[in-house]
Length: 160
Image (cartoon, rainbow, N blue to C red; front, side):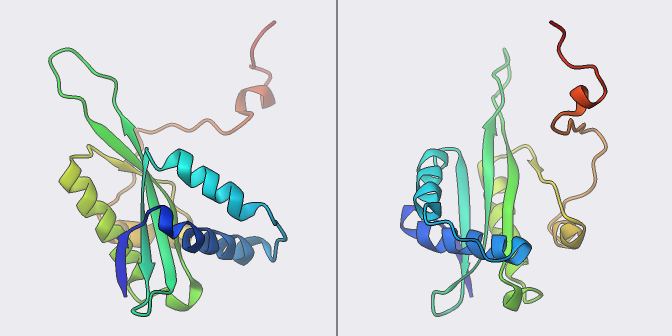
């Protein structure tokens, strides 16, 4: 198994993993435009995302993850830093528990350390917490979350 940075030549493999993930969660989906939409998304996002692909020794895609990069607003007298939001971590079921997720996280954390990202942030599922904890992530209660429609549900939305 190997983990490497993915590029435009890997769009079909990444789209295939995304489709497989969706089918795992929601069942089969017939979406003839998906590959074109994924390709356009990748082209738009590739300037601000870094994507890794895990493959078997034979080159079959078995996992992926990406990090969305954010550059902090400059401040006088201080260097500008960047941080990353980790997203779309997926390993095909047959390869879970075999170290694929750990290798993907290792590639990500090495990249973060080498490029000086000041933090990595993610939203784990209950099942993924142990993977992220092994990669050095911990809970942080300094973040706040506003779910979609939160204000309008309480009647505190924008006033006319």
